[in-house]
Length: 242
Image (cartoon, rainbow, N blue to C red; front, side):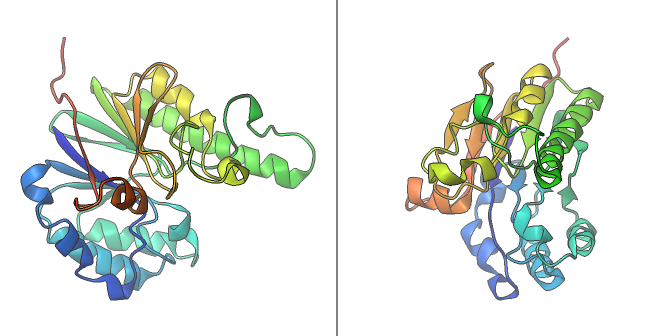
């Protein structure tokens, strides 16, 4: 299966038509489109409607997760309903299967990476921040555990590894992802993970077990691959082997 992946579209009502122009050939080059959060700029229903209209015109399956921008206006349930009403598979701790490939998606959260990851100690505000990261990792783990396909692909907004964050200012790394997301990716044998959020990060890395991780934030893709359409094309094996 050929996957086209992008994140951080930051759609506004004035963006209507932009995706159809930028992704005009995606249907001939990919079988499924993956969108890794920050679908809208301020989480407004009219922004979601403009995006949904353009996605519907692309005529291929679309799987998506939300990003932090999609929560800004406090209308996330409406944003999800608008997208789902146009056929977009919006995942939040859920999975879907397309032609034998299983897709799992969560937004993820911050907290940092490795030995420097923030721990649940001290003020209640810190404990709540860390708990959000733990909850998102647990949602990812549960969804992967329930998925029976051999080929599993993970969609995130926040980064699961530090490598694809590098390029951003180190001071903000703890707010760009969490290594708590890495462990379930490796444990359940995902073949690839995609995320956005890091506009100035690194386009590719891998987990400790070698699973490829792709940062597909559109600003980064434009800077890294000038003159090309702002999505990443990756092929995965869609056959379930005995």
